[in-house]
Image (cartoon, rainbow, N blue to C red; front, side):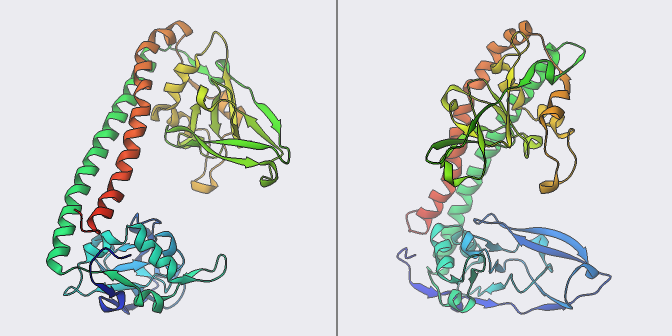
Length: 382
């Protein structure tokens, strides 16, 4: 990681924080966790002292640089935000105070989001599988490129200006998607019959199961949550899976994730992905002829309105949430237009469906923009 600036060991610009607090059993404490791949330092939970193991904990302060010994190699580090001032962490989350006369916290914060910094943390980690941890002494001797403070300020100001513009573009894109979904939901509700209809009247379970054979390759498909649709995945060879069979997709198949269907992991298969496979955790349904059109259902199931109906089918939180079983799904009651009304709505819905690939492409471009900005910034090209 050498961008043309003088190389300086992290130990020269960071001092490990040793501030600790005696845990009061009756007091409430914020606990910290760190998201992977530079996505930030966030509140894990708020607990009373009796729920914390041990008599002491380390305390973190705003603008300190904190990392996870276990997941630093996966980008789990960042700056402590203001709202976590005084939060507590275990010894697995060492925090370091930047020397303000040598390095701006924001400069280090942005640099830590680059692949080059992640590579440095990987190099400073060692251990066997599931026991790989960052070695602090090795981390502190790691060298980073460090320009003078005025240049750091200029780089940070430029990055933050461009990052704000990127975030505004994301906001506008989200707004456009929300408005399109609201239009689909409104059109659906106003064109539907007044009586509720069981999904089982317009959809039926229809799975093309194919036994898994060693030596055969099965191109896979996944389902993104929140109505983001199906996507192609790497192929799996028969000997690489414990599944006895896969479900083969076909054009017009409605694919429901039993695990994540409640948060919008449901979509209709297009021609492009037909012939690929999904695991038995993804159930496939077909439209009953004369009752529902695949094109109409594709637009409908992508809306938050539809997910809210699915969410009511199961109980639980997070990984403990119940699976959405086919029989539950088919008993779900929703408003539904007739086939003729669906056909009338399609002229408008097809226009909205046509812009989805463009929206997905725009989202990918926005996601790639900030890494590109950071790369240019720390190469002195911004």
